[in-house]
Amino acid sequence: MKTLYCFLLGCLVAVSSVNCSAQDIPSRMAEMKTAYTASGSIVVLDGQTLVIEPNMPSPVCALPRQEDGKTTWYRYAFPLASITVPLTAVDENIVSEDRVFTDPAAPQAYKPGDQGDATMIVVVGMPGKKFPALVYDREKLEHLSPGPHSSADYGQFQDQVEAFGLTFADDVAAREFATALRNAVRMAKTQAMATTQR
Image (cartoon, rainbow, N blue to C red):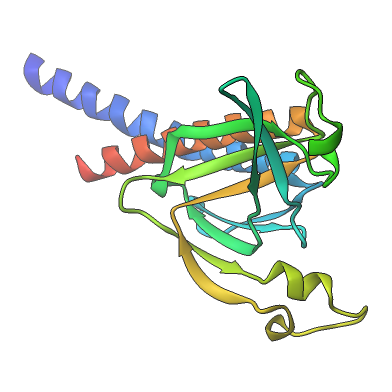
């Protein structure tokens, strides 16, 4: 009888922790939506999947690195119209945060120690996982005349990507987004693991 009681108590604790985890995921998603407001929008699909729609066009981000005593510049552009992100597909251990420069003239004016004007959060998928995305041609978008246009006018097409970057003008909002994302991913994976072990 004592063994049965311990087993039932263990099951109750496991179910309770899964329920708490499930209740906390929406809170973390709400935090991400709030932090991302100035950079784009986020829609929650099924409680564990995000559709992120960055403002268009996204900036080209330049990142300085010191190599052999010289500053080398790396440029990143993530022309995403939208990206679908199942939380369990994200590698929460490889969510990076970098201060970047969005001013095209930054490499000429840069002095070692200067801080970028934006923060780029790079999200990487678990091995073998890719994120469905709608991407566009930056040059086509930038050369469009004012007024309504179809997605074909700016070269939008479907793709699958292993990693993507999101740019934030506000460093605090970027850190809040990254923290909420890591926490939501951990909760979603814990919940998925508990569900498969039942």
